[in-house]
Image (cartoon, rainbow, N blue to C red; front, side):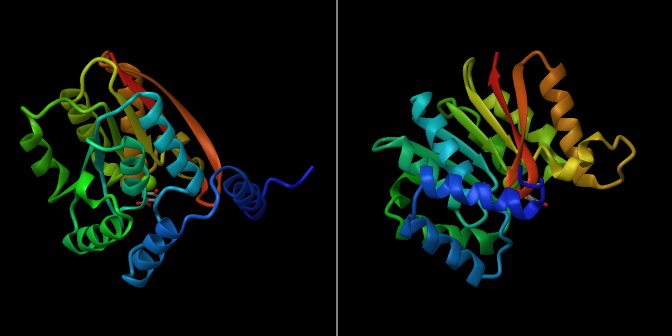
Length: 222
Ligand code: DHB
Ligand code: MG
């Protein structure tokens, strides 16, 4: 048995990506552009991007909301899966990130399906009230605001809307109820909300791989 080390998690994850995801020049170019622009490499792993695309397809989603665009990597995954006539609305607080994402999604050929709204989630989300409900919401932004984003996901969704909340593992720090790290506090609060708020039915899975020890929560709006 291989030792459970970050290096071996990475090797297994790279094998899974090679076997199940394959190389993709548009996605690789998006990551290269993100890196060249100095953005952090905190996008989802290739197997995570593929999972998002499968969830879009399985649910037949036509409208996707993403909170936290970064360089548009996960945005491209979901926009491809949504097909013609579908729409991804993605919120990004940093205008510089949004510019990188805009160039990336256009270069990937899916820019016409993607609406990048620049601003903080707390300011942009209320402006989406009155639009058609979202079928899937991917929350991948500042962890401090997870409960705010989950509340909006429920309000902007409908019964059956799928919610994916990224980064619930945080190197095992989620068990640390005395943590003073705002990201850990926000992650724990989001998980408690998913468990206690009757608007959600949820679970969470830890992952190890190219992004270390982390995970995601999966929920459906009741
Ligand atoms: C962080 C944020 C992410 O969305 C991620 O996937 C990994 C790390 C962070 O802010 O630390
Ligand atoms: Mg993330």
